[in-house]
Length: 393
Image (cartoon, rainbow, N blue to C red):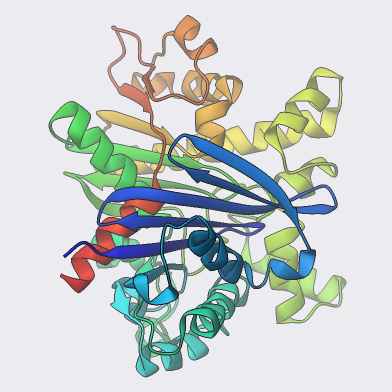
């Protein structure tokens, strides 16, 4: 029997929905702010539409989707939806698996939300909304953004704190962006017939990460206990000295909740430039002579290359570099700067091809490059549909 599965993927400033029948995409909706307006963009087949909504409907956007599905005749009633699948970003061993939602899951999530409130709390609000509009008996799959990284060896998971504290508190590197990494890895495997033994996936979007894959399995990743670690991101801090954290808390008179919000929303490219978190705007500012914009972009590229080098060290080389995420897809300038810095690894790209490729999947490496470089478009929604289908099989 075909399964209708509503996929929900929450971003920091947007919500994405997709209805799949088994693995066939039927409907998509994207909720986001455009200026002062809340916009929903919907796609059914090759037909696209866009409309404005009252801001208060953002919280209850799943209700808007349900109404739209019924009005369009895609379903006749809410009971036609067999499964709702929600992307979950949460630290903890318990969340390294995809699970069907039950009372135990919600209890564990209520505990974990204290560790990562800015990422898990919105998902819990969305789950309450799903129960409101679909009924409390609706089957819900919690799709882990960390499950792909469950293969990390212990040495890659540990922070250098007393081992007893790591084990007692469950304080490890869990890694995130796992659904995206899994998606582009699957695509590369299909295109190349196999995944090279030494593969690095660089996901560059609002969040960013670098993952080392040995024979297709994650063995090192830059995101840690929470999605704050590693690379410079749009508004997230990335790597920072713990001593600097303590100093900032003291000097800025911040408590733990305030410093977490500061590291999540005021740092990264936005903090470094003092003007924008958007790569496109920063490149325009750089072209106009803005030195802080230039500095922000230089730090961004440096941090990406440092973590790619770490991954190459963990793998003892690199055969394939996959560039994924919106920045990788759209910014040929950033791709060129990153790849030029990686020449010491044997990376060389076809500059003309790179300069004329935007938003498409493409092999960028030059014939003489020792490393194959590809740009891949991640499809988290389809990957979530696959995982949810396997979960209930």
